[in-house]
Length: 428
Image (cartoon, rainbow, N blue to C red; front, top):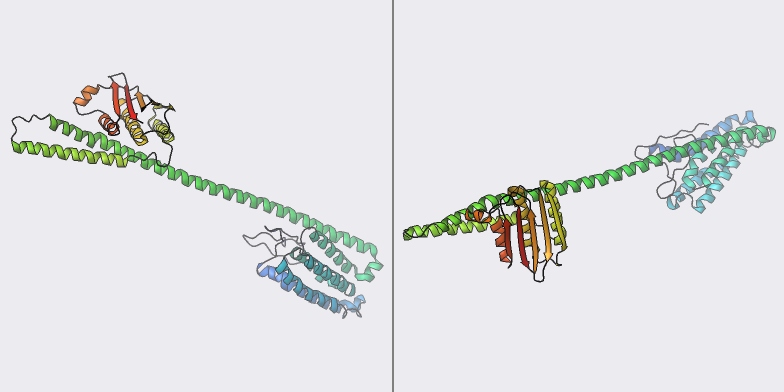
């Protein structure tokens, strides 16, 4: 006999009620799910008493023709008892969950009363179909297919005509039992396959969701790093531009003012010259402070050698210049790491901007009382004396000043067409 079946609601796990013979679907906690929503409430709350009333009414109308008129009133007793027992089953299932031992025992009593009702009124098999809905609600594990089989047996018992029908046509009873059992097992298998496919799809969706989440996080991280790198490179570029234009121009102005002969100038002119030179020096200090502030901080919370190696590698990739970094003989801890980084940054900037170098070699070595930093490029070189006389120098005065501030020295060895070698000795 057909049973009304709901369609799964969107976003919910299938409950197996989409098939004529429902089977349980395991929830995430291992318990069978219970139909929800208006249609689920109709199937679990209102359908059983409706089928019980229909089965007894139809039995009453057909009792004379089928010969069980004297038993139809007695059939009300087990039928009403099963309805009352369903109330207790539903409440206990809400408290303890499907598969609880007391719930299984009560359900067994319910099935026994159902057998008695069918024996008294064979048309109670109409009501017996609720067993297919009840199995996943109240039972768990292997008890579910057993209950489905018992329900199929009860339905076949009623379809044969009850006790008298089984006695009169046992072969028909056996055949109906086989048909009901095979149909129920077949529908259970199909529903399990559907459940397995659903679980596979859900697992795939979870994997895709997790992959999407990881990709989104990776994308955000890449965007963040790219933004940070862009900011750092722009700050470096601005610092270099300020150094190579404003700062170097101010150095040139100071050198020219220092070179003006003082003889022949009146006091007013000398004062103005001194004022201009002082203003230029103050502006040079401010420009160097701006360069220092704009330059990216490479050493915060990191190992200086690792930071320096990363800085060299990044510079090499950015400017497409082969750069090697050798710090195997460097002392630990590294003395004055910020000065080492700043001098290296300036030397690399000069190599990229002025020297037109194709290769750069950076070596850090330790001496008993000093750290030696050697930076060699194969660029076009220059005449240090001539550059100093012209007030230029490719940032070398700034590097020399920085090294001098920490008590070190900076030597420059270069000639046109022969590259440049910078050697900084930094006290330990």
